[in-house]
Length: 257
Image (cartoon, rainbow, N blue to C red; front, side, top):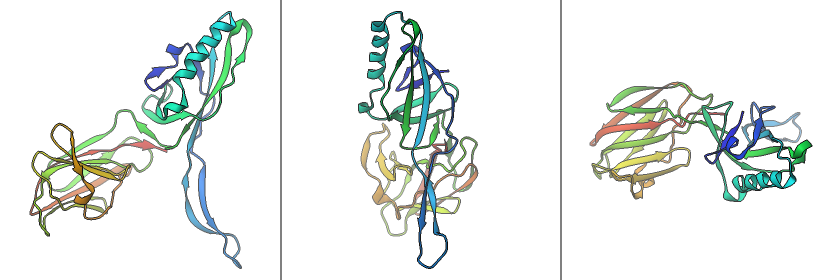
């Protein structure tokens, strides 16, 4: 087993890796409130904290301390947390990636023949793992459409890419209703432009045919409502009023918790 961090594999760094445990679910952050005179607590739900991934590593015999330190120096440069978050892929779970960085110091035990042993502790501020090959759905007709997510085990925050023409006006719009949540686009949007709505980042922008950003897309939204996709079957209903709908592409951003 090994891992890839920032596009570089542990094997290429002469490091052998074992995954000896797995955090099945990140720790919970509970919202409890104590009410005087009432037994127990009031429960306002919970969410999940960051995810921790610990891998056990070995360096094969190098026969000199200098050679061992040389490998550790290269590793320190590779995993330098000052460079920020990088994509982490574990060989044993090759269908998904995490966004991570080191969260603790690394102390290497020198073994016989100048082999090395140490643990690497990664933190994932976003505790979700995302599909390396994402699910993408393309809708070209108005009305009720079905989108079925097969990857992941929790709701995802998709990216919607809308093409069409929406003239300026008080009653012109294109409505994107995902399950019971409506995202209404009131324009203006011209031919050749694409409105990109990123529900995970809570942003929107208008781009041209080359992908160049033209302007902020949030003013095109009637409300800041960003629908999610459930695991399994979802309905996406397209309605155009005084506007022309061309295409909606949905990048699912399928994920695991």
